[in-house]
Length: 514
Image (cartoon, rainbow, N blue to C red; front, side, top):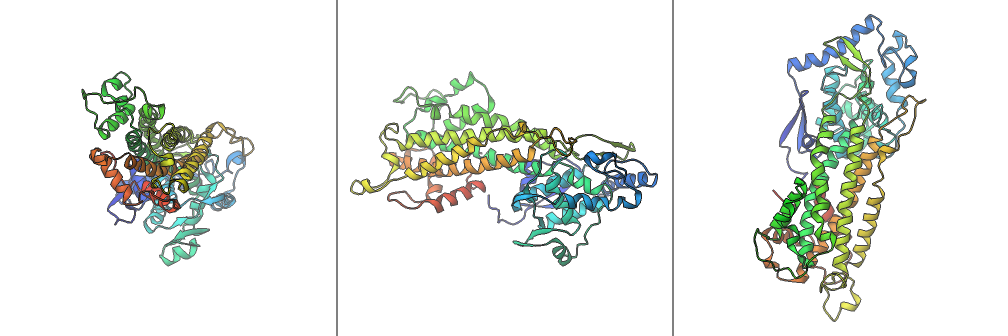
């Protein structure tokens, strides 16, 4: 997939369900955002804001509108100060630290927040939705620090940067440069928004940061599952593995569908057909080959329920209070709690880290002449006269070991580290955004392992010889890799080739399995 390709389609925000893929297309600029102009949709959105106005006129009691926030909910706010409350909310939450979310992550966060507000239960104006949609349309990206959310009361601090930018405050990334939001909005003739009483809370009191990140994590993990399968096929060829470990009858007696799907892909790659005569020379391979479908299959079988968790959150109204304009009720609850995303991300990062560990073990087999069945040490491609001064993939394997160790270290679940905060009002929190950030880091590390292992496995296949006997799919992968990185016949610095390969993995450049 080429992120520089022309924009091809639209993602319409009209209160109807979006998919993970919709968010990812917006995040990578493969699609443009379009806010529905349907009259019924506009009226339904505005009805919530009108109901809030009615309550104010009647001096009704609404949390975060006529009261303070959090443990300050017992503090009454005089009507003449109500209009100032939203600005105070996003202002005092302007304390995020750490690196900023990148452009792709920020677009995903904006899309997730816009979609939640488009459900029509947040008491905001259609005008606010237009302003959010304009940020996506013009690629005006709030600079959002990554650190500072505990994931209940939602992503308050990260999303305060979105609220502030809508009002023309703080900084944005626009056309590749950090610029004041006020200047960018003025240049595009977009009037800064003065937030209405419920609108600051509606923007900030939700799970958009963790949910947007979760959509990106899901798509990267889905691709890594396929890539780890293809790499396993190449490693099996290079190590003269026993393809019958993936026999269809064998897997029929343990019918996890994802695991069986992985085994089927391996059979196709290795041209193992049902009833084929046996030519294996080894009864049982080591686990990192023999059990690869069982390791990768855990991720494959997790993807459907992970999708359910993420897309349910994506298509929910997840702020507080919920505004039922039709029933004229204000419903106070805890929909800002990101527990489902936290659990999904903690689970996903564990499954992905296991892919890194699997490929690390396959790499170790390929490097070691005690276990690689006749391949040169460290997969060196040097001729005999130069072999003693060449080191092949020796250092790359050290890197793989380091990246794998770091990925495994990060699998400690963030969701069990709830911290009581905000005068014990937020006394049980999800840690969903930390879990999502951890998951993205595990994905990054595992992609690094996959890039190294892909180069090494192709080297091993070519050292083994008889490449023309490979299946068309494996021949194609070898040719694609060789189009980016030459055979390693003499020591050279591999960093740039690894970085190139990692970038292609991130872009899902190679079509692996239809």
